[in-house]
Amino acid sequence: MSTNTNKDVITRFMAEVWNRNNLDVLDELLDPEYFDYTYEPRNREGLENALAFMNAAYPGHETSIEEVVEEGDMVAVCQTLRGTHSGIAVHGIPASGKSIEIGGYRFFKIVDGKIVSHRGLIDLPSMLQQISSH
Image (cartoon, rainbow, N blue to C red; front, top):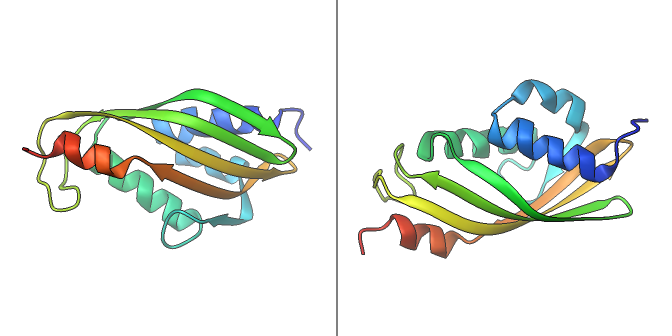
């Protein structure tokens, strides 16, 4: 068992995987039976697909943790995602060159130092409004 707290596992996940696209650490951070309630398919592949999409749509995006709360085997994160829509189309909207700054929430369950599940929600309406030409 790791000496890191569950919060440490998640802050490392956000920094290494989500912000630096370092997928090599996923073997260390994710349980082999990882389940994702947010992405399709609902496993590691879904997480990797979501990250690939973000990198393609918003190259160089960065997510900041605004608040993090650990209780038992759960870690809750309030986050802010920043980036520029300079890549692929998002929901049919071609690359706009516009910056985004949107909030989101994530909930992770950690067992024995490994992430076993994730649920996330971002402010998609705000994102679409910020990149649209309207």
